[in-house]
Image (cartoon, helix red, strand yellow):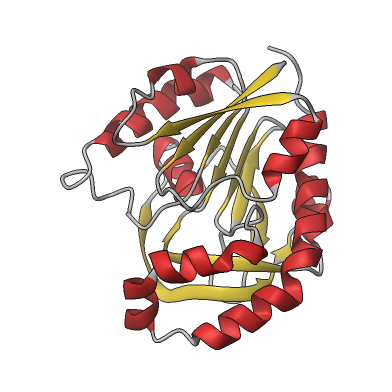
Length: 232
């Protein structure tokens, strides 16, 4: 079987609806827990890598020293052009490893909304998300790395996604979320949600309304990205 490595920062933020696609594509999934496991193999292996989200900022290295290890390992990995897909915090780590600025945003973007895809975005794997509502859940943002191709924006943030060639993809939003498991997120992020005064019932309603369509679109996006990977 092919192998897919996954760096996870929060137990309930997993591959979600992407798991089904990877299993159908005969990938053996290996999770690595950031801050607990040795991540060296995950980052140095030629196997494709997912870097998932979490509620911490890439600049919080004093409180979470393992972030520096991730950034340094990512710098080496990206030079090798090994297939890497970053989601939310994962995207921010990729941006940081490429020497782009990552910082607290002006607006806590939590909820469902559409993307505005660039021309390059419409020609990329993200084209399947055109017109779809996706789940946004972040307070930080990043500048576009000099090497990156801009793919998508949202109503609040210009930089929602970028890529470097076909192998490196970074998205600020959550195309992997399993809307049927949204309660895990509502429980796990209760402090953040309360502080941001997010309407939980609307979040539940919107998840039920848009979740199935995002699942289908997100899975098509992932299949396309996987199919465009070339052996190294």
